[in-house]
Each structure stands twice: as C-alpha cells, then as structure tokens.
Image (cartoon, rainbow over all chains, first blue to last red; front, side, top):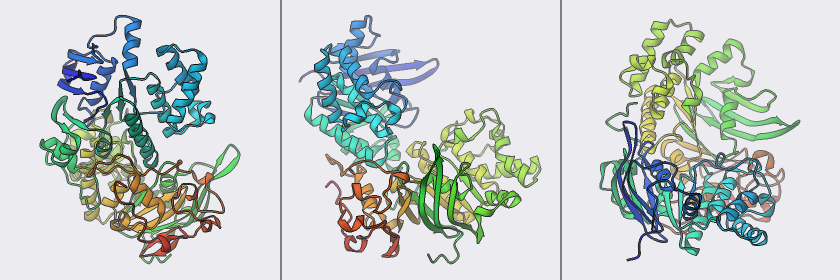
Amino acid sequence: MPEPVLQVENLRKEYGPLVAVDGVGFTVPEGGSLAIVGESGSGKTTVARLIVGLERATAGTIRACGRDRSAPARSTRERRLRGREVQIVFQDPYTSLDPRQTMEDAIDEVLRLHRGWPADKRKQRVRELSDLVGMDSRQTRALPRALSGGQRQRVAIARALAAEPQVLILDESVAALDVSIQAQVLNLLADIRDETSISFVLISHDLAVVRQLTDEIVVMWRGRVVERGETADVLDHPQNDYTKLLRSSVPRPGWKPKQRVSMATG
Amino acid sequence: MTTGGALLELDGVTVSLPVEGTMRPVLQDVSFAIRPGEALGLVGESGSGKSMTARTIDRLLPAGAAVAGRVRFDGRDVMTLSGADLKRFRGEVAMIFQDPRAHTNPVRRIGDFMTEALRTNSGVGIQEASRRAVALLKSVGIEDGERRLRQYPHELSGGLLQRVMIATALLTQPRLLLADEPTTALDVTTQADVLAILSDLRSELRLAMLFITHNLELAAAICDRTVVMYAGQVVEVRESNKLHDQPLHPYTAALAAARPNIDATSHRLTAIPGRPLSAFEAPQDACAFTARCPHVADICRRGRPALVELDGGLTRCVRASELFGKLKVPLNA
C-alpha cells in the first residue's frame, strides 16, 4: 500500500492548562477526502492550523507527502516546500485576501514563489485557473473590494490551487456563502478532485456539505476523536452519543427541535 | 390581500435608500401578514431584502430612506408612530439578532443590559426589574439568574448569550418577535436548544414571530408559513409543509435543489447559474429571476409579474399554474 499523502499521529496541543487537541490521529490517501466535524471548541480548526504550520504541536507527528512537518521549518526553502504541499482556504473570504492586490496579482505571486516560471507562462496559468473557478477577465483585474463573497472565495481557492498542492485544507470555506453560490463552489471542488490527484481535508460543522464532499469522516469532541469511518456510514448509522446528537440536531422538514437534557454552561 | 385579524400587515411596502446621491430600491412591493401567535419564515440570499424588511417593520431604517406602502401593527399605522407611541410599539415588537455579542455593551453587566428597557421606558424599579429578569432567564433554561445578572457578556458562551437576548426581548412582554438569523452563529446542537426554548415560550405566551434565515430547511421546520424573497421582492408565500414538495416559484425549487442532501450522497449539485441579484439590479419590466431560471420563456420578459394566488399560497411567476407540480427537482438529479 502506498504511503498516505497526509498522516497525523497522536497529535496533542496544549494552551497552558487547556488541552485543545488530545491524541488525534488520521490518514488521508492520495485523491482521498476527509471531513473533520465537531462543535466550536472541539479542536478541529486547531488541527488544521497544526497541519499547515500556523501552530506548533505539543506532541505527536504530522507527515505530509512523505516528509515530517511536526516541528517548524528550519529554512525558507523548507517552509516553501511545505507551502507547496499543503494549502489552506479559510472561512472568511473578506479577510483572507490582500485588499490592495488584484486577483491576477494574487495568483501570479503564488506561481512566482512556488513554481518560478517566466512571466508569459505564469500569465497563461493565471488565465487557466481563473477559468477553472469561473471568473472572467474583468473580475481577475479587480481588487477584492469589487468582488462578492462568493467571488472572493473562488479567488482564494484559485490561489491555493496555484501552488498545485497535494493536500487542500478547507476550513469552513463554503460556510459563509449563499446557498446558490455554495452549490457552485462545491461542484467546482468535485470537478477539481475528478481532474487531479488532490486530497481534501474539510473542516466543517455542516453535515450535508460533509456528505457531499468527503469519503471519510472524523468526529471530534472536546479535543478527542469520538467516532470515525466512512462518511455515509457514520451519518446514516452514528454510534457515538455525540455524533447521534449532532445528526439529530440538523433541521429538516418535519423536524422538531429538542433541548438537551444537560445545559451548556459557560 | 385578505388579512382579517392580522397582527402585522405589510401592504405594498417599497423602500429606497440614498446611495451616492441616487435613490436605490431595496424593497419592491413587499406584502405579507402575520397572525397572532403565528411563526412566519422569511427566507432569502444576500441582498434579497429580508433584513431590510425587519428593519422597516421596527422603524430602524437609516436616515434618508424613502418608504411607500403601509405597515400596520394591530390596526395602527407603524410609519406615523412617534414619541411615546413609538416606544410602546417597540416594546410590543422585540428584536433578536444574529450576533448577540455585537448587540451587547462589553463593559456593562448582563443585569444592566436586560433591565434597561423596563427601567427607562416602563418606570419599573431596579429590584422588580431584576426579579422579572431572573424569572425569564429561568424560562430560557438559565437557573442561576442572579449570578448571570452580575456577569459581563464575555463571560458567557455564544449560545448562553443568545438565550439572554431572548429573555431580554421577552421582558417587555412583546406580541411579535423579529428574529434575524438568531441561530446562524451557533453550533447545530446549540441551535436546537435555542429553537426548542423559543418554540416552548412562543406557544406559552402566544407570541408571533418573524423568523429570518437563509436556510430554507430551517424555516420549513419551525415556521407555519414561509415567505421567500428574491431581489427585494416577495416571490412566494407558502405553508411550510408544502414548501419542499410543492414549491410554487422556480426560485424556491432551485434553492431547495442547490442544498446538498444529508441523507444521500450525490456527486454534483443542481446549482443555480449566476449570482443572486440585489433589488436595484432587478429588471423593471421582467421577472427578477429570468437570468437564472431554468423555466424562463418569452412571457417572463413582458413586465414584472404580480403576486398571484395558487393552491392556497402566493407566487410571483407568470408560468406558475402551468409549472405547478413540475417544479420539484428529484434529489441527486
């Protein structure tokens, strides 16, 4: 069996006395798609930040594309290499782009940094990536403030794809989008998966989106993995109590909201 | 519109706001009614005018707004209320928002915030106001009310703070609650808690509610009827239990089909091409949905359609009766 493109083992992250991530492990095969679900404070976003190197793990190992990335990169070259392998798209398309940079320049910068191509080749690739995410030439020359939330998120996705990463982490990347735009972006992501060998890690609280986009699922609760398996199987037959609660809390026609017996305090 | 016994009634409400020197429409001919105790859903995407509708009802429009049409609450014309009448009206119509943290003052205690309206508008003493606040906190599932009144907003989680907001809104004993995406920022499990509390209190107090959301499934699940808005216009009014299976407007059907299904895996979604229009971008002489509608025909471009009755609901589609029963897209198409 080939080595998985992403391998996380016994991951732990402490913030002072607080244990945000506690013994989390999973693997993602090449071309695979994994969901990490859980409520706010479950540690799912911390896991994403650890993988891309925005936080340093207290313990545990992270391997991506056959290389260890548990400790911070020790050279610029190493950091760039890691950036090329794993890219992330954040939730808020309004704060994840440079307000003074056009979409064209934002993508071009990534191509220059990670691929080192000559200008004409980069220009062609910018056009290809813009087409892929469904943006026209007028929009590619616009600054972020002239674009809608859905358009900005597509820019963020195009920019992440420009590095040709092996793994794309989507941290609630479609949560803030209008329903009709969300469907377009989800279809785009499905197409990209069909056409490349890219792997996805989707961090989400939206179980319908999770079902749409992933093969496997990890359910986190208070820093720990409480259930894992094939996405369809876990959603249709949840075993863990928290997963069951999560599943039954999703509104649908005929649904009657029920209060939990134990109240959250805080 | 026949609205005998309506608590709130909007009739042909059109609102324009000044943008860079020109008046831009944000609402176009919005009409609907809420009966006493009824839960009415208001669904739409960004720019559809759903929040602007709530702000128009509560008289919270920015300066310079031009309003035509009528808003009546319990028979009174809301647009001409002023002074003490307006204050009393705002006590009867309470509002809760998406982000409770943005609507509380971080340096003031929960108790100050909760009892302010009672103390300043109704002349209730601080001790009596606090006693009522504690009782209402209990009804939203917060047992240690006295302690909570002494706390600051940052000491409470989002779900807890939203329950405080609901209790605060209920302190003035309103008859209508305007809830603008009240659970969007909460986890789904917390959302279920908050909605269960709301639904219990509503039936207990016979409280009517306008529930604003972008989530069609949520509106259908908790509201008696649902209004669907697009580009500042009402395009459909429908009993919620018929919304998914027998939609009247192509936009409602398209919105339902575009959401991924939690019960079945599909490879592609039936996306709506293009993007949602704002009211000022909508064509004057055609249906606002023409550019994205899979059922568009020549007749759709011969003037803006009127809201017409069909199968017990209302729809702003000229082809509605011809398309009736054929709009539901099979899942995983």
